[in-house]
Length: 315
Image 1: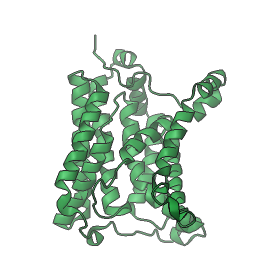
Image 2 (image 1 turned 180 degrees about the vertical axis):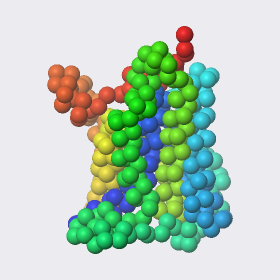
Image 3 (image 1 turned 90 degrees about the vertical axis):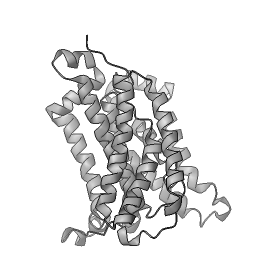
């Protein structure tokens, strides 16, 4: 049991970074739909730089820069040029996928062992029964992912800058009237979110799925977008969605021994189930129930930022 939970947590770590980045971006009112492409290209950049330099952490830095660059283009297109966020995101996603396939051919199958993130057991805590193996016998990437979720939750709901972040995503005109630089903060949080996405990309190729292969992170960008909606734009619920997806992935692999004839179907089953869950939480009947029971509805479904995807112009 401990080994299973530890495996699920380790595999989920990259998505904790990706979904945290998208959460903070969408909280500010900007949808970064380039995730599938930016995640894939940053995963390649992280592995390539680490492989060429022999420095794992330079790989993470390069991946963060790639993710931030994609997010900056999204922000500039939306905030400054007033282009459609969805259209720009899809174009960038396609670009990132194509570039990763073209530039990554020389790194396919290259050994990643020497540049893998080293394990880091936490002394004393790792020896605790059950929780020691589940929580404290991983590496710095897993620990950082867990801490990031907690810090993001505290920041959004327990600090004044976090309230400003909510304000620019919910009521930007009211936030502007209070002296908050709406578009400047949207730039900041979108790029910061993109950097987190990039770090998540490196976490795939340097830790969770060591090495590089063709379309190495395929579908994980789209599933991250779905998990953010599934989690109601709340960092803790989003993290729970990531762990649920990790459990479904583990279950699909475990069932391959039981149903060998379904080895082609089972690996994609977690993606289908998460999309089904997303459709379920957005079903009209469930939304009606949530409207009648607002207290429970806000806990189960969450609320999208009111101004998400909308341009803002100071008057």
